[in-house]
Length: 143
Image (tube, rainbow, N blue to C red; front, side, top):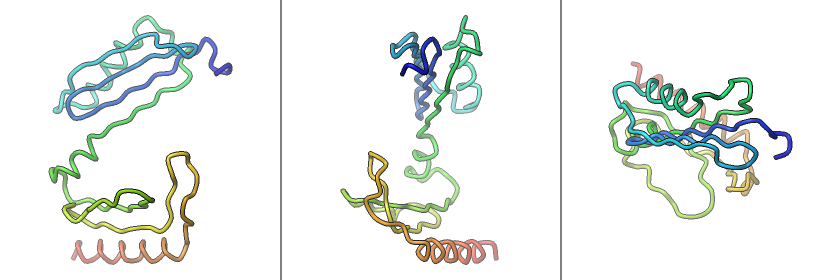
């Protein structure tokens, strides 16, 4: 982490109920924050969390900001989102059942494990076939 010396790393994780923020400097936690999510104004939730987390911090001293959220995933799984298209590259391990998902679900060949190593090969033919079927499915929905 020597190339980050003196610079801050910012991490924001927004779930359906709470948003968590952390400010890291020289590999150590410098500041944290946790607050409730305003479901009517998600942008304001992120913005006010960032402002509070970065209070008295010079913006030029920030190396990176990482934002992650489960809001979209939660909405899809809970069935509260409009229909979505999902391209899934599932790897080894526990098989998931996506039959309850509203929308288009297509499976791609190949996968990458948690260490970012290919555990199955990707094939261009499979991707072309999936994209063509997705295009056809979207055309049928629009008719």
